[in-house]
Length: 408
Ligand SMILES: Cc1cc2nc3c(=O)[nH]c(=O)nc-3n(C[C@H](O)[C@H](O)[C@H](O)COP(=O)(O)OP(=O)(O)OC[C@H]3O[C@@H](n4cnc5c(N)ncnc54)[C@H](O)[C@@H]3O)c2cc1C
Ligand code: HEM
Image 1 (cartoon, protein in one colour):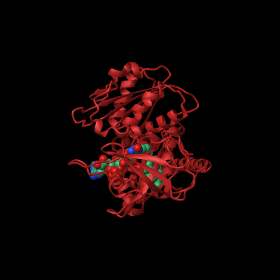
Image 2 (image 1 turned 45 degrees about the horizontal axis):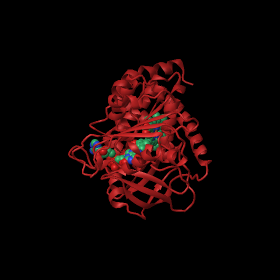
Image 3 (image 1 turned 120 degrees about the vertical axis):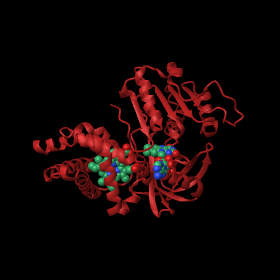
Image 4 (image 1 turned 135 degrees about the vertical axis):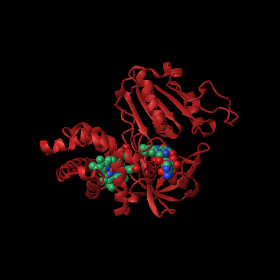
C-alpha cells in the first residue's frame, strides 16, 4: 500500500505528466531499445516510428497517476492492455525490465525535480501496477488455455490461400501447420501474427482482425497494403505479406484476442460504422450472423475512397439481397476514380460519410454502435452520434493501432 505521503508525491507529478508525458515515454522507449535491443522483436516498431505507442503509454501512465488512490477504476483499460500484452506473449519477468527503464527515465527527464523520495514513490506505484497487470495477464493466459483448440505461445500457420479483395486489400487464409483444431474466435477479435523482416533482421508482430466467421479449421485475415508517399514510408509487414509471403509460406500467430466483440447473449440491434480496412471485424460479424441466421437487425454504413478499394463488395451485396434484417450503405469519397462498370446502386452515396444523411437508418432505440477505422473517423463518429443523443455507453470502437482515443 502506498502511504499518504507517497500518494501526494505521485499526484504532484500529474501536471508534469499531462504536459510532458509524451517526452517521458519517448525517452523511455529510446532507452529501453538501447539497453534491451532484443525487445525490438516484441514491439511494433512501426508504432514507434509514428509515435502512437508512446502516446498510448503516456496516457496510461497519466491515468494511473490520476487514479492512484483507486486504480480499480482503470480495470476496463487494464483488461484491454492485458489482452494486447498476452496476445504478444508478454511475461512477468519483462515487467522488471520495463520498470527499471521507466524509473530511470523519470529520473533522467525530470532532472533535479526527481528527488529520491519521488523516485521511491514511483517505484512502489509501478510495482503495485505491475502486480495488478501480471495477475490479470496470468488469468487471461489461463482462460485462453482452457478452450477447445487452444495453444500457448506462437504457433506456425501456413498461408493456405491469398485472395485479392480490392486493389489494396488481400485476404490470407491461415491454416495451422500441425493440422489440428484452432480456437473459434469471437466475431470482432484479432490475431497477433509475427513475421521475420529480412531488411532489418528482426521479427515483427502485428494485429489483424479476423475477417471470417468462427471456424475450427482456419482463420482469414484481410490486409491493406500500406503504400508509402513523400510523407510516410511504406508499411513493413503489410508489404511483406502482399509482395513476399506467398501461398505456402509460414507465419506465426497467437490465440485470438481483443474485446471488440459481438455480444451474443442478447440480440440487440447493431449499427456498424467503418472506414477503409476498418471493415474487417464487421465482415467476421456478418459472416457469423448470416451463417447462423440470427435475424438480428444490422445497419452498416461504410466509407472508403472509391469502388476500386472497396473490398468484399459483392459479398456484402449478396448478404443484403438474402437477408432482410441487414442494410448496408457505402460512401465513396471519390466517385470519378471508380473504374468498375458497376454504376452506383441505391445504397451508394458520394462523398465522405455524412451521419446527417443517414440519421434515420442509424438511430435505433436500444442499438449498440460499433465503430472501426482511422482515428479521425472514429472521433468524428463518436461526436456525431453523441450529438444525436446516442449514449456513450452504447458506443464501442477499435483503433487499428495502440488506443489513443478516450471516451470521457
Ligand atoms: C486490433 C487491430 C486490428 C487490426 N486489423 C487490421 C486489419 O484487419 N487489416 C489491416 O490491414 N490492418 C489491420 N490493423 C493494422 C495492422 O496491425 C498494421 O498496423 C498495418 O498493417 C500496418 O503495418 P505495416 O507493418 O505495414 O506498417 P508499419 O511499418 O507498421 O507502419 C505503420 C504506419 O506508419 C507509417 N510510418 C512508417 N514509418 C514512419 C515514419 N518514419 N514516420 C511516420 N510514419 C511512419 C507507415 O507509412 C504506416 O502508415 C489492425 C491493428 C490492430 C491494432
Ligand atoms: C505497468 C506497466 C505497463 C503499462 C502501463 C503498459 C501499457 C501499455 C499500453 C497502454 C499499451 C497500448 C495498448 C493498446 O494497444 O491500446 C501497451 C502495449 C504494449 N506493451 Fe505494455 N505496458 C506495461 C508493461 C509492459 C511490459 C512489461 C512489456 C514487455 C516488454 C510491454 C510490452 C508491450 C507491447 C509489446 C505492446 C504493444 C505495442 C505496440 O503494438 O506498438 N508492456 N502497453
